[in-house]
Amino acid sequence: MTSTHARRELRVGLVLTALAATTTLLAGCATVSPGGTWTGLAPATPAVNGATFGAPEATADESPSASPASPSTSPSPSAPTTPPPPVDPLAGVSKKTLAEFKPCLKKRVAPRSSGSCARLVVTKLKSAGFYPWTKTSTINVAAANAILNYQRSRGLQADGVVAKQTWIALATKAPAVPNVLPDKCKGKGVWLCVDQAHRKLTWVKNGKVVKTFKVRLGGYAYLKKKDAKEGKWKVYATANGTWKVYDKKVDPPSENYGSGAMPYSTMFYPDMYVHYSPGFHAVGYRESSHGCVNIGKLADAKWIFKNTPIGAKVYVFSPKVA
Image (cartoon, rainbow, N blue to C red; front, side, top):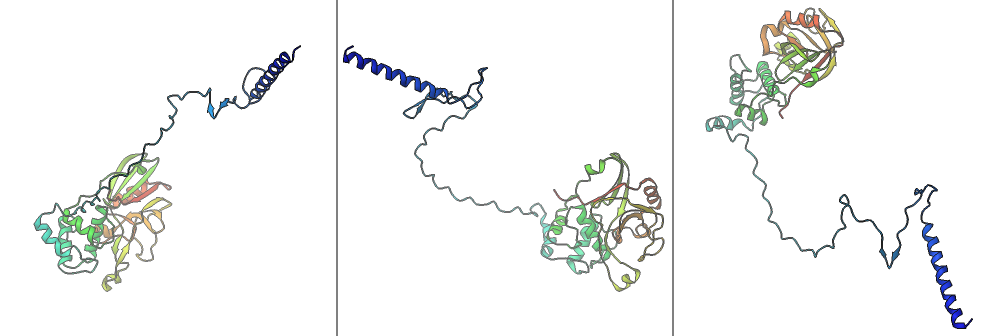
């Protein structure tokens, strides 16, 4: 054999050996089970000079690669925006009404206040149906309770003090909040739903309204008779929330009011009962309860007492302005 021929066969042998080694390396990137299913990593894709071959094309569900970014340009400066002027809540009020309210809009009329602004409050409450008594220039107990009831009816903070929001409501003749029974009251069983805005109790059974009653709620009141003589009165609130009737008594004892003050009490909170009120029957909304839900008709209180079982739900709520 010539030396030239020997060298040629040596080169062919080296090439075949290199190809066999390459094949073995590629086969070792994944393990194939006897059935032909891949059980390890996916086969590697050979790369040449950094370029990958055999990669799948992008489908419609895949995001295409981002194209090279174009040279950025500086945005032109925008003119500063001027915020719109605030809406005047009294924009639609007549000149006559505005002139009437203007001297009082920044004043605070509270219980025991007196003067022209206090008289204006009473006049407007009377027009709105919340003060049926003789007008006064002093915010007495009746006027303070009228303010409370008006504020509740309009979804305002009920504190008995006429400030900005209550002045605006009176000046614009703001409508009452919607008279809607909450979905919560339509649950299973008996529900006594007490709406402080509309001063009513709705008696509901299994989602069906059975009866509705006018009620008097907490507010400015005298604790005892001697307090009236001394001019002592304060707010006794009816608490919002969901409660359960835990007891019923025809004539529960009372340290402050004596026997017979709370006939036919349906008791749902330690200091709050639904009961007949001789005071509510006699003077209406001139005064308020001491936190209880007062019924003005004895027959109504008896009906609630008789038909409301222990464990019934009581929901007290105050709708607010949307």
